[in-house]
Image 1 (tube, helix red, strand yellow):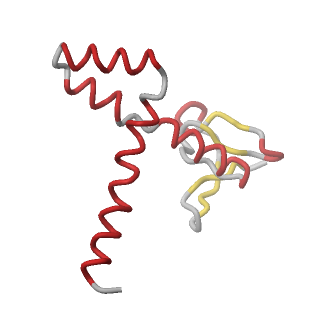
Image 2 (cartoon, rainbow, N blue to C red):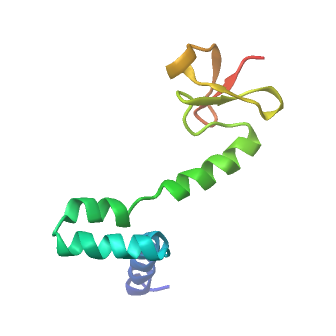
Image 3 (spheres, helix red, strand yellow):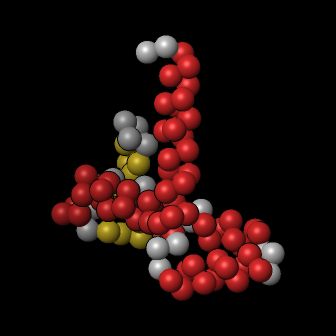
Length: 109
């Protein structure tokens, strides 16, 4: 692969998610109407927040890692024995063990 093609592929790989996230967020008619209203009111910061909200990605990532026994945010929730969820360190000061391979915490049970 020549360098020009490699750069084009890299740019395409980078831009694809940036274009897909707003499309996903505007799939519902109320979201499209709200976006149009924000455009008319020139509230660009709120529009940007609406278009590039990637909470759905974190939810899916969390669902996948939970099945492996990992937590994407050990401060909020820790995955324990038999995949039970416990309040994280932020809330309860739980004892946990640092899993340095994955940089997540596992609850001691």
